[in-house]
Length: 384
Ligand SMILES: Cc1cc2nc3c(=O)[nH]c(=O)nc-3n(C[C@H](O)[C@H](O)[C@H](O)COP(=O)(O)OP(=O)(O)OC[C@H]3O[C@@H](n4cnc5c(N)ncnc54)[C@H](O)[C@@H]3O)c2cc1C
Figure: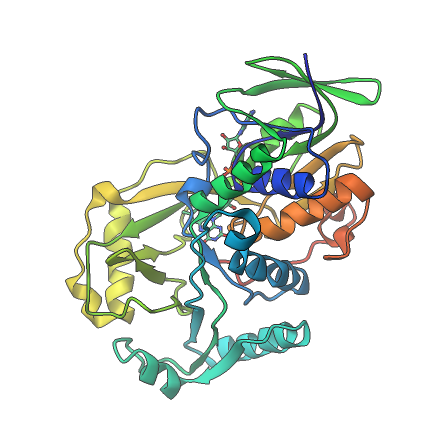
């Protein structure tokens, strides 16, 4: 039997960040239990690595206001690179309704303290990127401190720091059952039993199954997302931000010597599907060439494209904090496509809640599990 102060189920970027923040706060008897033989095989290793503060809800903006400066200083803090590239996110509005939406979000972002966001006129976007088809672009919004990180590197950075300072990582160990013995949880795993008074569910797209082990019905569903990297391409600048076409949700960013293309197919249905469907290539290339005519010349190798899972909640916000029905069992789930960018804030919030029962970073009650039963959902509409 292994004993820990805190047992974390899942060694993706969220579990690793929580381990880091707990150890940094002085709680170093932490064990992270990961079922795969290597970290990053869940959603973290499949992510596009986008980080942004351009959200529509105050709580998401606040989480980014902690997370992005954290990523900017990651290497100084952890001695490990996360490859933060502040190339920005550019939202291109193609209707007055989009522009009104961006303006409302902009006002909230500025009011909360975001400094580098600005609204753009259509002509300014054309000046920045003449390669974009701009006949229908009425304006947009750009934030220069948004950008990208390397999710795998950040995850390894968090976990290496935590391990160097006392945390334990078990790989190739699956949690198969959880039982309660007085005020302690006993976790049955394929390696050994773990006894801990506090347990954190960080099982990503698989978190509903883990929550079931303590009798909780967690509203987190897996939803496939596919990404298509292109072959080297030099007819669009590699200093470009993440560019989002609001007419259909197509977005892309530079990656290596080519670009990484993304589009949320509205026909996708929930389920554990991680195969890449080759018919997606034509769908996405059509949208790519429609917005960026020179993308007609893009070459892609379908074998390099991949699929992974978003962990969706009904209101597209994560579920954070202690479960009301299982005291000592904490949730850090349902990031709905934002788990990489919000992993710094999540680590801090969970560490605060586990160690002190409160946090100053956000109003934690907004994201607690009880919001569903109490009809307090807060909808994020800026989901890509
Ligand atoms: C295609 C794609 C693009 C994305 N783009 C972005 C983006 O641009 N920006 C962004 O912020 N987010 C993005 N995301 C979302 C982001 O990747 C996730 O929100 C984030 O990785 C979630 O991290 P996690 O640690 O919770 O989950 P995961 O990385 O999935 O880790 C969960 C871990 O739990 C382990 N596990 C599960 N069950 C058990 C068990 N019973 N016992 C032990 N271990 C278990 C799994 O093996 C896994 O390693 C994207 C996701 C995808 C798929």
